[in-house]
Image (tube, rainbow, N blue to C red; front, side, top):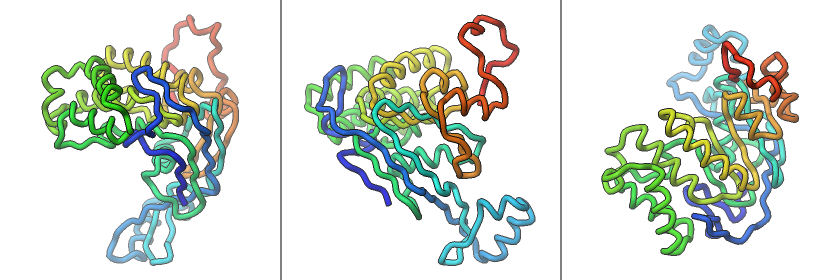
Amino acid sequence: MVCRADCCNLLPVRPHAHTAGILGVRRMTDIAVENLQITFPLYHGNARSLRKSLSKTLGRTLNTRFMHDNRDRVVVQALKGVSFTLQPGDRLGLVGGNGAGKTTLLRALAGIYEPVGGSVTVRGSIGTLLDPELGMNMDLTGRENIRLRGMFSGLSKEQTAQVEVDVENFASLGAFMDLPVNTYSSGMMVRLSFGLATAIMPDVLLMDEWFMAGDASFRNRARARLENLVSRADILVLSSHMADVMADWCNRLIWLDQGQVRMDGPTEQVLEAYLGRPLERKADAEKPEETPPTL
């Protein structure tokens, strides 16, 4: 079960969001995830033969990630038994290998994926930095998408105009701002999506690490803009492979392994367990490293 109270994704954001420096009314914000389970069906003409084929290929992994549902379909269990709560001031990072369930959990929090078991309850508006195309109408121009987002967010014409100027200045799309989004390059799409997503202040900010895509100039501008957004959001949930980002922005980490919570605790404690080594201390930051720390 997914429960939303006074929230919508930055597709769209709540009517009382902060935007372009304008403060809205702050409301109660929290997240409660209880025994969350999410599965995805693998469509195949013969479920039993598919299971047998997968068993040969994946071995024992099949027993933990693949199963039959009540319709005799083979499903992959993306998340199983995930539970946690978040309150204002919490900055949660998600770590784990590829396929651990990090992005699935973010999308479940955003209301994109429906649980097959357990519940997700979010109170507050949700801002998503999960996919550059999420919430975009590809047939509309960049400018039209901005105005549409403002309308869905309940912004006044004046507030929407401020957002439009802010996004246009940040994205630096020039004449492309008035061309259909489906004509944009991937880099242009990232700049527009990122600029728009960070122009309206949500209560809950959900981020995947695609925002670090692009050239060095964009990454530097994006990080400065994000730091302001992160500091003002009530709750942050972030998935990243960058250890320094996790250490700087998060006060709590959840380590996901094959769709289940392996460890949940303070950032430094979980990072050191996940990386298998002590974290570099601030005093050592100026020492040269052969390889920057990554997750």
